[in-house]
Length: 400
Ligand SMILES: *Cc1c(COP(=O)(O)O)cnc(C)c1O
Image 1 (cartoon, rainbow, N blue to C red):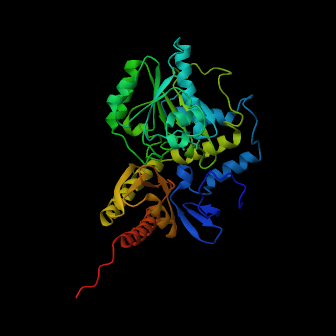
Image 2: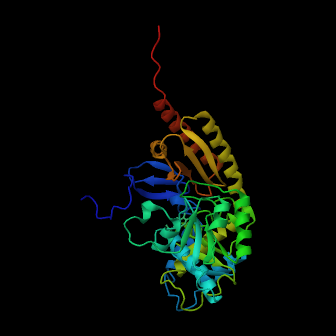
Image 3: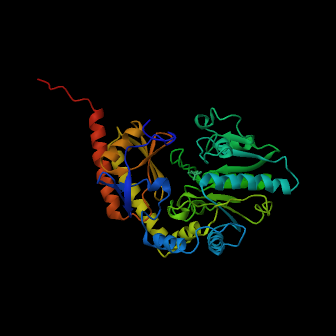
C-alpha cells in the first residue's frame, strides 16, 4: 500500500505547491496553466488578493460560531445573492451536493405544506450530475455511480436531455418539480436549446411544478452572466450554487423564491458548518470582484475570443477534435480520439484541462484569464493536437 487515501480518485501523479492567478506551481518545479480551475471552482484564479485578505482577516476574528446565532456575513451574502437573482431566500451549505439536497427537500416540502404530500417526484435528465450523496446520485441517475450502494432513493424520473415530449409524458399527479442544469457540465458541456428551457418553465407553470436549476457549475460568472439562467431569460423557483461561490473556499447555497421556500421553516433543515463566517467572507469577497464594473463583460469577451480560436483548432485537427461546445468560459471540446488522451497530451504541454462525459475535454480557465494567457493555452493546445494528429496518421511508405 502506497497511500492511506481511500482510492476513490484515479489521481495524476502531480502535486502543487502554490498558485498565482491562472498558474499553478508544481512540487516538481514546473509551472502549469490551470484551465481546470479546480473544476470550475477557482473562478478568480489562485491566491486572489481580495479573497486572501478577506479570509485572513476573518480567520483572525471568528472562523465558526454556529447557526444558533445570527451570522452578519451570512445575512449580507444572502442579501446580495437575492438582489442579484430571482430569489428571496438563501440556505448556505458546504458543497454542491448539499445545496442540491436542500433544493430537493425544498421542492418536496413545498407541496407537502400545500396539502399535497404525495407530490414528491422530480423529473431529471439523462447525462445529469447533481452530486454524490444518495439522493443527488438518484437524481443524476447514472448507473455506474449507483451500483452497489443499495436501494436507490425513490422519486426521480429521468428523461432524455432536451426531449420535451418525454418530459410531458413523465409528468404525473405525484410530480413535484423539474430539475435541470442549464448547461450540463459533467455530462459533457451539453447546451440545451433556449426554447427547451422556456418550455420547461411553461410546463411547470401549467402543472404547478417547481423549476429547479442546478447552477453549481454554471453559476457565478462561468457563462458570462452571473447565473446561466440570465442568458436565457428563464427564471427558476429554486437554484443550487456552489463551486465558484467561495472563490475556492467550500460554499454551497440553495436559493428559492418566497413561495417555493415557504415550507422550509425552523427545524426543517440545517447544517453545522454551512454559512460560517470564514466561508461567508470568501463568498462576499468573490462577489465584490465579480460584481465590479466590467468583470462579466470581460468574461463574455474573452469567452467569444477563446471559442473562435478553438473553432480554428478544430478545423485544423479534425482527426482529434470533432466539436467545440459551451458558453462564456464554460467550454468543451468533443474529441475524435478518447478524451483522456487529449487531457494527457495537454498536461504534457503544461496545460491542465478536465475530462467530461460524451468524450469531451473541458477547458475552464479562471474567469480572470487574460487574452495573452488564452494565447499561451492555444499554443499548447496546438502543439498537443499536432502531436496527436501525427500519431494517428500512419507514416506514408516511401514510393519509387
Ligand atoms: C460539481 C457539481 C455538483 C456537486 O458538487 P459537490 O460540491 O462536488 O458536492 C452538483 N451539481 C453540479 C451541476 C456540479 O457540477
